[in-house]
Image 1 (cartoon, rainbow, N blue to C red):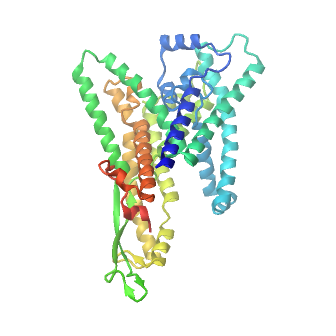
Image 2 (image 1 turned 90 degrees about the vertical axis):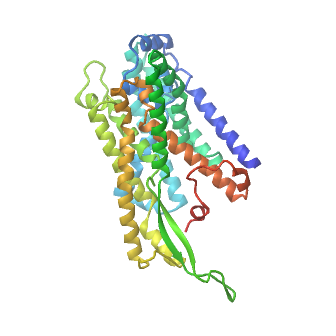
Image 3 (image 1 turned 60 degrees about the vertical axis):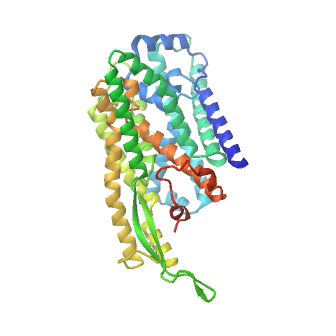
Length: 431
């Protein structure tokens, strides 16, 4: 219990450091001018979205304005290379040493992406608000770009430390904390706008709760494949005379929250690289409006593609079939070996389609909420990536804490606080 307490305290401490970093303004930036420009013209939908995922660091022009999205983008690129480049595939199959090498290349690629995004951010956002120093020199530009790169890499380091020494997936937790930090302000703004229409506020709250409940069902949905395992013999006695009956759990959303994060990261790259202040090009007009048809259509397609892609990485039917055969397990009515692998692969493909489609529908709900009259800031929480990320990460963190307690025979501490849909002993034990 003491170790778990230390992990939780460390996680909260590192999250606090990340939050403090989002309020440290870049040297030389005129924060007063930035605030005045935001109050006068507000933020467009894209700026609101980017600020949401950086916990306000983007709109504050902080040292962590880029957040950890460059790292997510680099991770996407490395995983795509793993499907096409034999050298990367070889590293993926080398176990722990290969994973460390891939992580090093991912960090290097993150620095390169930050180097490309930092000037675009300064020119597209900070300069457009009139917050750049009047005497901004080449030296200032160079040092500010380095500060943005360092801030992003520091955020990555914090996330990795949370993953290694704390509780939960650090990168995902930092994104979730950034989203949650913006929720009170967004809800207060919506209440202020609709204060004369209480019925609308009540309907919005009910709809928000329904969206969260639906998202939990998507994240926690499981298809149980029945399994039979051969009887075990200990010495001269048969432990299970009739064989053990078990099941193989296949989640509807086996890829978790990663397809949402990946898709959102991809959607931010074109606008950051091809930003224009006065005359937006075709690409920026199509992808720069998170409530537009073009943006949401492409986002939905990317989510579906990444769901299939990440599910293929997470679930290896051939490996599962080999493990079942090795342990004397089999699916009733299906021959062990190749037939089992094909059966699992077919079932996973059928389950992944409605799962990916459900994720895509939830992801475009903010656009529908915007059309229904919800303000931009609160619409971002009305479904979309924010709710998917929050629900997925919170459930995953709770399950990790639960597994930690179960593995140390502390299941009594969980009595009365059972997480609905949590993994059972069969799922925890694996195959």
